[in-house]
Structures are given as structure tokens and as C-alpha cells.
Image (cartoon, rainbow, N blue to C red):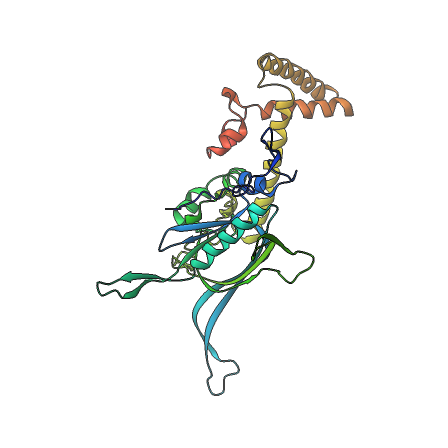
Length: 361
């Protein structure tokens, strides 16, 4: 269970007042306060210490974020063979992470130092106390690291299976992350380097009191090894075991009508036809909304357009339409096809997985 909420307040330890007589608070001195970005947009970096279930948050002033996937092969050289025979061993994932911890106020400088102190404590193991006043190592310092949606625990294959059946717009709309530190990626921190920038004349420090200083800008860099919590790979049905790995960004599956086509070229043609049909549906829906079919007088407006469409159809059959009449004919035809009976829009039905062609009138 996390023991903090990842909330930032620059004046938590040293509140600044603009008028001591009236007690008027300074609030956030900067108009573009970083507290607001971290608290409202949750642009934060969190560390969750697994053994103690403690956590610490930092504002996501990221300077370095790089992932590396390494495949380990065992080469076996055979006499007379041009290349060795490679035997696969495993795939490992490592991360290089760096961020800055700036201080806008003296209170924030103090809190930054305290948060960094807590993170440094996370790198040490847990001990169990014995009866004879001795301690033995009981738990390793495993940590869950969460950097918004880029570093987080996979939601698993079951979540991905239900998500892929939704349309692309619904999948994208549901793609969101939280700042819950316990949902972070399980990792081992191999090294952490901290630069307090005491020697940098452009940054400097805050002199709090006698023999007491607070850094204005702290820079942290660490090397991380990821621990995979599930077996990853492809199954006998040629499906990846966890489609959510590593970013929980599931892609929409192709329509069954497309994948049922014969050859690869047939599938490409079917995919293009499906795309054209999707674009037409979207345009039909936009035209229906523009005509106000879902409004208070939508029913009468649609009937009026249907009568106009019938007259244009008769004239088209009799002697043809002029360019302007043809454009109006195509527009009204699109609008009436975009209308969905029952007051439910195409997008609402699409979100429920219903075939649109069954409802277009």
C-alpha cells in the first residue's frame, strides 16, 4: 500500500506571505508553477519500495530515458560451417533514466532533499531481527518504477483480449495511466548517481542558516534492470503472450472481413475498401449531424430532405442533373444514410461492437 499521494506544494515547509500584517499568502509565485503540472496532469516519476510498500514521487523533469533490449545467444562453432549455430538463452531489458529536481522556493529545496534521501534509502535491503540482537538479510530492495504510461506494469493478456475487439477510437480513448506507484515496473536499480551542482556558478545553492545549505538543482541518473513478471514470447497460435507489453498500447485488430480474404493482395484490397467505407460512414454521420437530424426538429427535417431527394432522383432519371443539383443530391443522400434510427449515433453503436451497416437507414 502506497504511503503518499504524490502531491506537491512548494511552500509546505516554509510558507511565504506577501503581507505579514494581513497574512496574505504568496501562493504559487510562478504563473507557470510546476506544482500545477505535477498535481493536475500527474506528470510525475514515482518509486515504490516493494519490501516496505513505501513510495516517493518526483516531478517528471526527465533528461534521459532510454531502453535497451539485449538478446543473449550462445554461439556454437561447427567445423566446416560458415556461421556458428546460435542457441537462444534469454532477452533482457535495461533502462537508463535521468531527471532534474529543481527548487523554486526554499521550502521546495528542502523537500527535494528529503525526497531524494528517501529514494536513497530504497536501495538498501530489509533485515530481520533475531533474538540475540543480530540481523539477517530478509528481503532484497526491489523497486517498482513508474514514469507515467512509459514505465508501468503490464495489464496482462486478458485486458488486451477485451480491448482489441473495440474500434480504434475507443481503444485510444481508453488508453490512460494513473500515478499509482504500485502499478510501476518491477526493477532492480544497479546504480544511482546524484549531482548536487554545488560547483556550478549558474545554479548555486540556498543558504538556509549557519553551516546549512540546500541545492537549487539536483540531477539524478540511474541504470535499471527490468524484472519480467510474466513469461514473454509467442505461443503455438503465433500470438504474443502479453500483447500489452511493454506500454499497454494495444493496436486495433483488422476487420474479420479483411482477414478472411484469400491472398495477401486480396487482404490489402479488402483493407482499402474497408478504409473507404469507414471514411464514407464518418462523412455520412457528419452530414446527418449538420442537417440536424438528431435535434428537436430532426424528424421533420429528414422527411423534408427525403422528399427533396426523391424529386432529384426523378429528375436524374428523366433528364439528368446539373452539377450543382448533382452535388446537392449526393450531399442529401449521404446525410440520410448517416442517420441512425432510434436516436443512437454510429459511433455509439460502433463502441458497442455493432455492425453499422445493420443500422444505416
